[in-house]
Length: 373
Ligand SMILES: NC(=O)c1ccc[n+]([C@@H]2O[C@H](COP(=O)([O-])OP(=O)(O)OC[C@H]3O[C@@H](n4cnc5c(N)ncnc54)[C@H](O)[C@@H]3O)[C@@H](O)[C@H]2O)c1
Image 1 (cartoon, protein in one colour):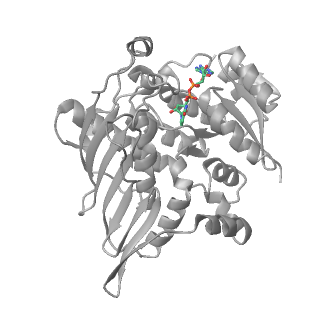
Image 2 (spheres, protein in one colour; image 1 turned 120 degrees about the vertical axis):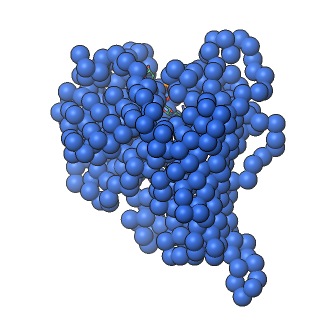
Image 3 (cartoon, protein in one colour; image 1 turned 135 degrees about the vertical axis):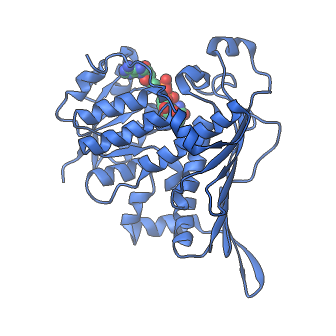
């Protein structure tokens, strides 16, 4: 089978940290044939690093390249939707970085475009491919957790606000570019993991609160225009007696938080690190798994399991027709609805219904230079 030909759009931090190296691991099956960045120096150093032959400074030129089957959108959040839609309109399958878009309506437009133009749409939700997710999914699908009634989504950094605490670019902490803080940077991974494992239920009612209390370096604050949350808490009601509570921290004065969990009538799992909790013969058990053994046998006895062990590996397999693409766009859309509901609840100071969030959602798309001309 021919290698899948991919084009990278945006040669910044994440293209460098993950997309390039991950495709290198898949080099027998995928080839990065082109890349695009508006900043020529970034483009050149990225292409030199990954030996990418074709270099574009205008997205529209990359999209005109007939050799490219799929594009990776590694741009800032509020550019994901317009670029993904235009790419699908021009016949490319699209892999988008997370969060899916700047707002719920922008994410809906991406799914509609994928249907209209008959293109694949995949969103980067890395936690779906962890060993914990793989094992938890098996337990849930086999009924070992019984009726699931509560989930807890958690993410913890003690002092890890991008840029102002030393890591990452300043765009992460500007609401105009990123749309939000800890929730959009990390929370989307943990919420989407729980949604994936429990059947992507639609949320009905949401309460959220955001916080920004801890001091930061004044110079970096000024340069970045920091105006997003370092901490967010919330409660999500899915109806039918199923709920999720969430806490996501970029910075908090605490030593740790327990990992995300799912609890059911017959058993429960914690996802990070993985543990499985159940009662048998009236004795309570706390079990762990052997990840080394799981990984070894997944790669030897059951190689098709490897299609579900990394986001890019899954994407490559789906593009090559080796497996069905997971509904990551639908999971990301539902996650987007929860995000937007948490923020609206915080803004209004009350519980919101997701129906009112959908009705009030507005586009946050920003202008993307070079997309159409
Ligand atoms: N950095 C991380 O650790 C990380 C982790 C996971 C996900 N992400 C996601 O990846 C996305 C990108 O983040 P990043 O940290 O790589 O940002 P970044 O600023 O490092 O990279 C974005 C790149 O896009 C380029 N760009 C901007 N406008 C363009 C245009 N019109 N045409 C072509 N190129 C253009 C910029 O020059 C820049 O090189 C975000 O959605 C973020 O949420 C980032």
